[in-house]
Length: 312
Image 1 (cartoon, rainbow, N blue to C red):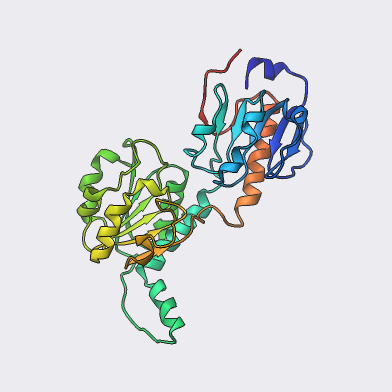
Image 2: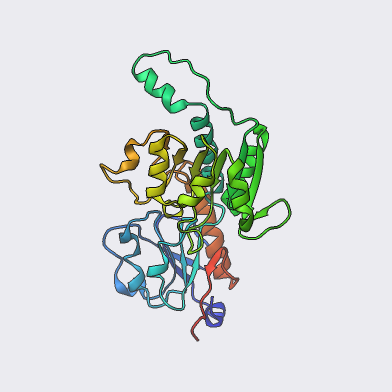
């Protein structure tokens, strides 16, 4: 927050997508969708918590907030917000809100794909007792690409399964391998879990060369963002039957009717639901309450991912 905001005795006015308990020094205005509150109400809004959606309509209020200082997302990823961020405004993401839920789904996708659950469900629909042996997670070599909140949560959940796990991050540190070593890990990686943010350096990270380096039968799991993976290259590998995949995110997204991914063999799809569980709402509210309380007290914001030069 700016120095003037820290000494301002007026309540901190915030535009939020859900009702909150009364907070000292904070005045909230609730808006999630539909007609905006009148301009005189919006004129003094200094914090805007975006609705939890990727719909472009969620940014409708931003242009009507001349006093805006902090824009808060309820998503961990924020690449979709950057084009709507006004100059001089700090952007904060929902760090920690989605970590556990997304990690749960990542491990669920690994287990479901490894143990053949999609095949069993289809066999049940056909009333078939389709006994078959599938690969375990135990004893497999797993590479988790990304060591942020979600990546660390995935690693913690994989630990009890008796698999050999390697963590990969942008730079090497204790018990974490640098991404520059990733090419040497891929030829022995039987499961790869993607948990990276979408940035210029991760866009298209999983390209044809990445996929070709994986051993036959390897499983690719993506709970990050769709464009981290080259869809055309992945479709080619899946159609050949050489690799398998479990995707919570796709490129494009939502996946349109008739897209080749729908009919690829060896593919398990979920519709971007990693963070959208019963854990979301209470954690999101706690984050927003903590954030507004800090800002009203003149403290720096939590989880700032873009810190512009604040205008005087």
